[in-house]
Length: 297
Ligand code: GLN
Image (tube, rainbow, N blue to C red; front, side, top):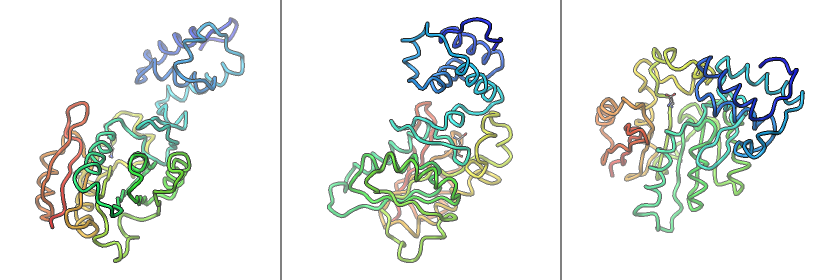
């Protein structure tokens, strides 16, 4: 932004920044500008337009300049702001966790449809497990709507768990979710075998060789949350196997998958030989985004 020899109103700053971002091929230039400016001013994004002719103070301009340069370097808006909206929550996010994606709301919706379906009126408390929870987005969204269930969520990264626990302070005040550290299912003992009614996961599913070809913004996210091994499906295979042990007979397994993985996931699921009623749910873009199935009885 040019030196502040003139008065910059909110509207001036927004127009200048949106153009600057699009010239530098920053994704979502206008929205990025709005979110960053609202953050600096401590107001809601939509309130920017109620105050469009308000001038910025030199301090506000200086703070905003530094955010612009981070964004120009590709840093995701969510990490700059330290938060991301997901399922009507404003979740804390840091570079220790994957930024929750709108695609993942498909996983939440599908899980909710099963939790509300047949059997949901049985008095027994149902147990739901989320491996690799990251920011806790999925399990917290489920816990919000299903006070009658018990939730367990783990992550290998203790830094990620610290973020999830922060989110739980705000969105799970009744402590329905138990968060614990575990490298995959290793912390679950024999007593957890056959205990869960549902396992729901958004595991890493990008093939290792593809990660560097994704948008540069992705490079700011934890590789551990994205890298699914040579064909992207190592975590899916692992979960299919472990869920065979930890789900009750008839329990549900739901996994988010890549937009082009349906056929291969169907194959891997069949090879696991433990599941029936295999189906796929589509995201808003029409991609098969979630595979769901039932543990054979
Ligand atoms: N949907 C994410 C992406 O393509 C991947 C998330 C994941 O691996 N779970 O950026």
